[in-house]
Image 1 (cartoon, rainbow, N blue to C red):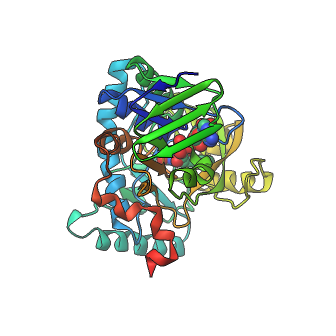
Image 2: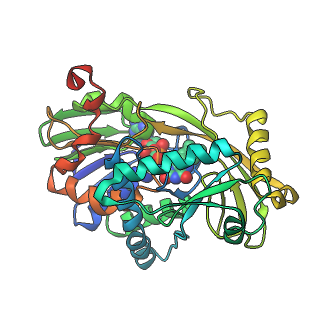
Length: 373
Ligand SMILES: Cc1cc2nc3c(=O)[nH]c(=O)nc-3n(C[C@H](O)[C@H](O)[C@H](O)COP(=O)(O)OP(=O)(O)OC[C@H]3O[C@@H](n4cnc5c(N)ncnc54)[C@H](O)[C@@H]3O)c2cc1C
């Protein structure tokens, strides 16, 4: 079969592949986006939808800057997608809070935020620890058990499913080729010369971008790369729709544009098991009711679990192959938050053929013992 020629092939059509693919296609590259389909683990279809900055990058100020950069890029990405596709992503960035249910939690959070700010240096970090009446004015219906909150102006949320749909529509409207149900079955790599087989498709390109989420761990070595990512399970509960009660998202509660409350934030080491655990769901619901007692009046209508894509240190992995220049890999556990920077900043680097040296800190070689020594 004669291979089809592209400027770039992306393997994995979740939020990371779709955001980078959209960015590349918008720059005029002809791209192929392959996606394995419903049998794969797909974090992009099971996540919480925060565009979240305030907990990111303790001990890694470059990650704090990268995340803040993405929150800044988000409004232009959302506007561009809406313009091109008519699909709104529901982006709201009113700031966000993390709620503390005891003095110990409040003290620990204060110390965490102070350290983040110190590490931010000249870049700065605007935050406040807020207690009592001021917190209650900010968040009507806050429960008496809440001792205080940390607040930053950078946080927000969006609909991850509308985002994914808009990125895919934007990509194909720009002429990109999307192949669902197309698991990579064969590949050949040489510098700036890659050949990919997936089902009936055979394609060649001078660039390949690995965006297969947890699948990257197995794919990366074929292209002279590493992606030592592992799954971390998260469960989410959804209530019936309510009138607009929550003016801003918290790290484990948000109200969608349509009115549902999402309760989230479990972090479980359960391998590839995506079953749901009633005990954990109960704890999540209890904490939500302690934070906002009015939530107890709402019925739960849905629940699910999905797998985060985690590097050993929880930071993203962005890398380019030394052995096969033209091959890139991208993994992160905050693909909603980082969509702005993936489309607007990372895609131009890949189009230009090399990652910015500022991204060296995100290389997977940081896990290599020889590199660390
Ligand atoms: C419970 C939960 C809550 C979360 N909450 C948030 C949040 O609030 N904010 C935030 O920013 N992020 C959040 N995340 C993280 C976010 O969902 C992920 O960072 C993001 O979805 C990762 O996207 P991805 O494209 O890398 O991976 P995926 O969505 O897993 O996509 C990878 C794709 O690659 C395809 N694939 C795999 N192997 C192959 C192959 N061999 N050939 C072809 N295709 C292949 C699969 O079909 C899949 O569609 C959450 C995640 C979870 C699980």
